[in-house]
Image (cartoon, rainbow, N blue to C red):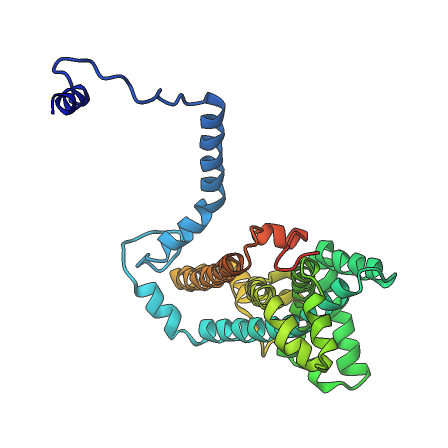
Length: 315
């Protein structure tokens, strides 16, 4: 018992004894602090105009530039204005269908480019898709307008004269390239062993694609489709060239309103469209996060776009 008492007494703190510091206080690096402050200022500079639009969407005055008071009258006016709702409906319609077209064509192209990496046409295909991404939109708009006129008038293809059809085709050209690169990056990091095993067991090509290939590429397809949706919502330059009077999308309507007088209702609807875009981007992040959690892939969206989409069974 004496030995136990001595051990206990040694473990108890001695009154008046100074405590030793558990660890040194971490010093703040001035360079890192300066970079952090600079980063915050950069984000504020980029997003300050967006915050201004959101704040002015609660303006109860008649003009957007003159803030009269806080209220939600602008949202009521925006939702009750037929011209605004029609423009938003056209934009949503075009965004949905262009995203679907881009998802189908881009997914098939991405799989073909990933599974035929050694073919000579892959380099040309990659260069053409990259050229679509880097070509200024005004150049695409100037070239698409006479092309649509030729198809719809000279060749007699009546559906091309529709503004909705023109908008869907024009937006799909850019979005299809984005989906192709995302799906290709995903499939490039996946081994073909599962598909080859299914082929050895007698599974037909369609069954192999639906049961094996598509579940593996599904995160890339979903994220690419949602990105194509968001890209189509705010495509102003192409829409300005190819849209018609019966199909005016929301960006063209806002651009035309700038020439006269901006109303708070435009800021209110712009805020709602911003929320819709953020929801779509949040869904993209959620899909990629769940894909990383299931496959153990640490690559994010930026790595996926750059071609670093390694996954299960990577080569």
